[in-house]
Length: 135
Ligand code: FES
Image (tube, rainbow, N blue to C red; front, side, top):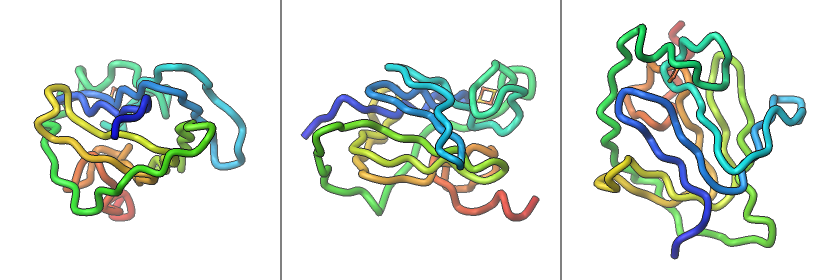
């Protein structure tokens, strides 16, 4: 089943999130409510959680190829909002029905909840593997 919310994992670049997107801080303060958001995953943006293009200057590399052993059948609720809670210096907690894929869909999964890396250090990108704790 497809849903409107899609997290695109860009090669060597940010997460591009399309759908009914809400980005909020840990206190629930809404930072952005839009149909599209560009979120940093290299960890070096000067405007976190948003991408500011710093990934190009720091030569962030990630092929955006992944496997997801925790893929889920989507649970479609009424709102279908995708709520992204930003945990500074940690991860993005994403709640809501979503497809996560790279740009050509050679890597693709569906989730109702995901912890995504925003520090650039995970060895299981785009997912968080708690490598941020090593810093
Ligand atoms: S991914 Fe663009 S600044 Fe980090």
